[in-house]
Amino acid sequence: MNRNFSISPRIHALSARAGEARQTTVGPETIHRVRTANGITILVRSNPSAPVVMLEGALRAGSVDEPPALTGLSSFTASMLSRGSAGYDFDRFNEAVESVGASVSAGGGTHVTSFGSESLVEDFPLMVEILADMLQRPTFPSEQIERVRGQRLVRLQEREQSTRSVSYRRFNETIYGDHPYGLPTSGYIETVQEISRDDVVRYHRDHFHPNQAIVVVSGDVEPEAVVALLETHFGAWPAGPEPSSPADSIPPVSGANGVQSKTFPMPGKVQSDVVIGCLAIARSHPDYHAVQVANNILGQFGMMGRLGETVRERQGLAYYSYSALDADIGIGPWVAFAGVNPQNVDQAIDSILHEFERLGQEPVSDEELSDSIANMTGTLPLRLETNDGVASILLNMEWFGLGLDYLQTYQDRIRSITKEDVQRVAAQYLRTDAYTLVTAGPDANEN
Image (tube, rainbow, N blue to C red):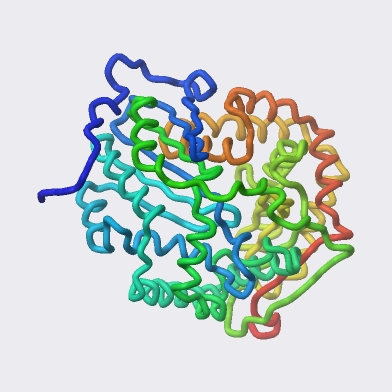
């Protein structure tokens, strides 16, 4: 098929394959970082091992910027970006991307609108052109607005039928109260129904600016040529008002005093889902790596750590049980999850709380600590073997201001965590006298 699209003549200049040995490190010496005049930070890491290019980006426009009455607006706007722009209507967009086997995406999050592409190196200039057009010049066709609304309403209705989705959404609403972190980025049925085309246009106009945007590229490319290509397509994008720092854009988060416990009945279901946890730390907190190691021991390593071994395997109380730390710009929760037979809800909760308490009261074994640290330091190199893994990590590093040498110091940071550190952070942040508990499922007598 003939593709009559405007593409950059820099295809050969982009390639980093000629004369370049494979680079095995990711650090200041292999990351090309520049900031454009309109405020975009660009990071490029050349990887000549495969003729593929991954681009990941983020704009400072998220659900924290939307009014509560229009919860879901940011995510809705992101979904509309690929539905038509000045140079690419919906059909032409899909033809351009699919005809070369590439992908282009956009999505809305809490603090950012993410965007990206994956393509062969020869098609990368076209992907940049398409991304630039959809981010800067979307048309928001009315018929596509209604199509996206219909799709989202179906997904939201499906969300209300999942005990797992209901339990986690209600947990966030309960632990955060009226804080923006308590609202789902996808919105609610009633708020999505209220979003108009004018709302989408206004949100894009007010919040889509290049200031503090991040673009990361990893693949078989030459860094200077990538920067030149990006400046060609994004350099004329006018900067908006200088935004405040992400931390200043949200209200402070405060934890619960005492125990908050809520149950949400869902008749007809065969499983109950339990979410239990405490507000812990922000990503910038000095305890972050200690909590990560403690969480790996609690509910990640092997068969989902102690929770998987005890609650699921030994006691047989859950179909699954694990834990996670959701640290962001603001304080995030340290949470345990379990899917259980409705008859076993109380026993499963008691068992989870016992593991919380045990981690804070008793030192972990030397073997648990060493195995967990080996797991955490050993999986990182595997992620760095792929362009999407590199791009994702670099975007995370830039967004949280971790520094270009973060990956080079990561293993030492993790290996420095002691048994005393694990016990201390567990006792401090997994409070068995001040936690939030949410259960969604049928009544125990129903089954």
